[in-house]
Image 1 (cartoon, rainbow, N blue to C red):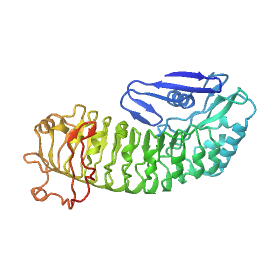
Image 2: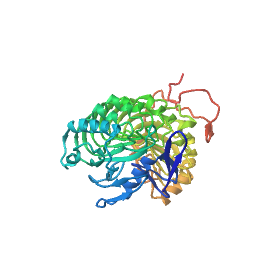
Image 3: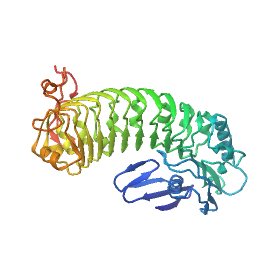
Image 4: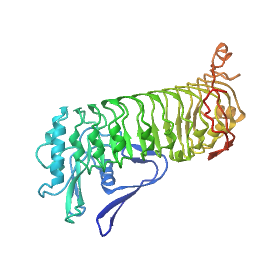
Length: 446
């Protein structure tokens, strides 16, 4: 990892470029291929320390006059980051920024009702950089050109704390990451969180938060990672979520309901996980080329209906597609054969039918194809060969003649009733769709 400090005449802007070969892990999610990412140095330094500092070790690092590394807490392994560290500055008098941080943290401490690990015993006195789970860094003050301490992040993953979030946390305007994975926090996200202008990562997963989708998160200007999975949020998913420049969206294992927003495919995110909710209706048909950055989409175990839209083939970088355990119907679109990077495709436990085409089974990077428990009536030549040679291909529970482990004949004698479903199929042109009438593939026939 290389850290580079950049200067200009007006202020000090410090950034870092991170290149990790193989699997990239950045604060809780991974991409399968090598990538370069630009993040503020505070986030990169914190990430490096969280993933490379032994839990029992304490040492010092000198960056422009003083950063010290110390105490770890909890068990690590959280969705947004591993073990926690604090990074404290020198022993200079407290700055106005840290005084505001002290006010915020003490207000939050008073709202925490259970602390079985005794983490908050260190949250005493104005030296907030010594608090467990809190880490600081030094930045250049624009007015004085001197280095001052700021709170750069809070990581309380696996701390087993209970309580609520408080509005005063918005005083932490320079915080870049806020990780609370695997605690017992309840309530919702305060409206004031939209004032956390530097926040890039918000991980509230594995808690007891409830209520509608926390709209305040949509107004955090620099947020790129949003993890709300394994909570009790409910209601619709707002359309504006997919207009925001997020790189990772995790909403799985909540109680979200209603239809998927039609602009889902416009999100620049590389990972979208909406699995294990109560989402219903048709899959969005209005995918655009803006969605080509999507690498993983998981919609399994919802109540989705209708066709698999042609637009799924526009996600040229997609590596994981899982729409299993829904009620999708009709034939597979030929555009799925455009997913040249796809590695895992799970269409199992739906009501899909027709002949499984060669175009899909011959995808060069596909290692796991599951179409089990549908109503497919035949395999093309390539699919037949792959079913014999590739243990990662599962065609069981269908209506394919001569194959083992298929549905009983009475179940196959009548295909699932499609009603007025009309899965309009458009001529295949990978990377775009051929000129065609602007018709909703799931709409009723005239």
